Amino acid sequence: MGYQCETIDPARTVMIVVDMQNDFVAEGAKLRSAQAAAMVPRLAQTLKACRDKGIRVIYTAHVHRRDGSDMGLYDDLYSPIADRSSLVDGSEGVEIFNDLAPAPGEHVIKKHRYSAFFATDLDLILREWGITTVIISGTTTENCCHATARDAMFHNYKVVFLSDATGTFDYPDVGQGALSADEVHRATLTILAFSTAHVMTAAEMLARVKAGDGAAKAA
Image (cartoon, rainbow, N blue to C red; front, side, top):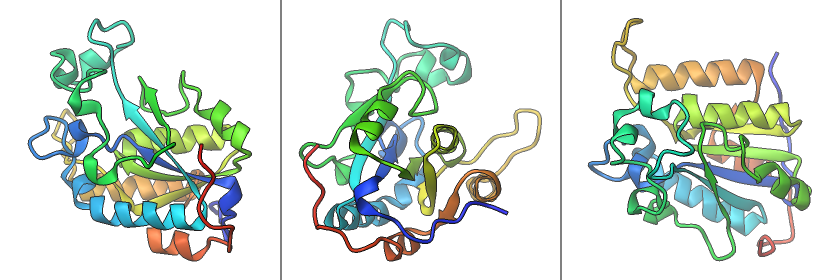
């Protein structure tokens, strides 16, 4: 069982960097994922390798308008969103973490829900580019990365999910028991590997990339 991706065609593949923003990665951020912050150097190296191999890179940023007009239920779920101290559109907190800054011409898709496909033009862009495979990296493993991977599969994209270039945070006990970040991460990878994606390391992904024509075209 489980989807297998033996080779990756760089011309038809995109790397999606999910929500690696200051509010999720920077030291002291209220929504910080230490696990995601720890894998920043590996992800930065992987993005450089993807660009060198001709794989396009596209970013997402989870943002909300200060007036709450796109909020939905998020202000009921997360107090730093409710009090407008995190994920406010236009603030420094929603910018991509500097060590992972987009290259010239790379797009940042603003999203208002976990999935990068929900109410955005991501699918439109990927179809314009002729993409058939998406690689998922970023944070958090079980929420925005998981939701984006699932929606990608629902849209008939083949999905590669990077086990060592995604990350999450410790979960407190809210009635079902606490879980460590490692436990949440591992459970999500197991579920995705069975039902949605080919889960692999960044090195394993790069080893599967077919020889291409060098750097990706400017977006």
